Image (cartoon, rainbow, N blue to C red; front, side):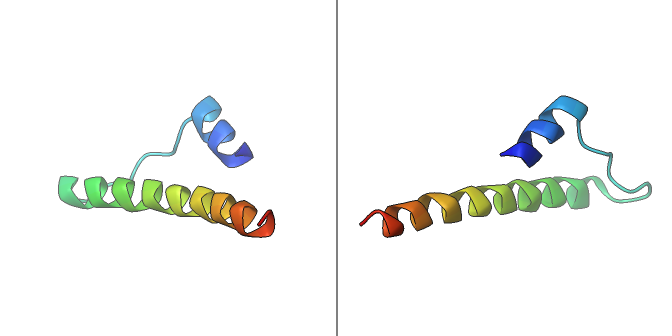
Length: 51
């Protein structure tokens, strides 16, 4: 959660110069998917631990 706060507060660095727009879009989707996976792991771990 702290990482998300820092990203929101300071913003994200831009993509590498010279990349294609489709690569930028895919990189953004994968990046947010990784954030979703990390949050999902915390949620499912808490659900398992409290069972």
